[in-house]
Length: 117
Image (cartoon, rainbow, N blue to C red; front, side, top):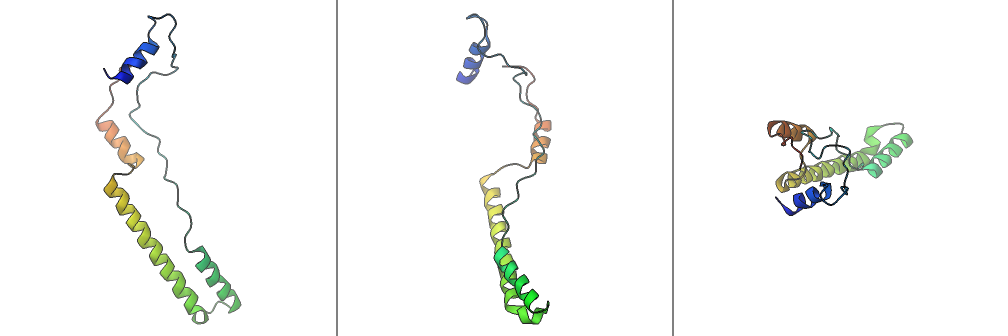
């Protein structure tokens, strides 16, 4: 037994009178995790988009008069997508977090023992 398991079993035992811990659920890990979606990141290129929309409004929605704003917006979007791809590759190389669906399939394949500590 490890030190943590020994401490938990000591706190749960009745050898020293009343147990210190009284769990309301069994002390066993589940074989599934919550299926939550990851949080969305903050919006990118908002200033470029607002400048483009302001230009469109001033020029009666004519694209040719706002070509520089359109180009700056598209370049900003391309940079943001490249940065997001780099972040995704970095997190996959470092391990990162498993998606809940994959974690659930792995936990079902290798279930935890059903006995308490």
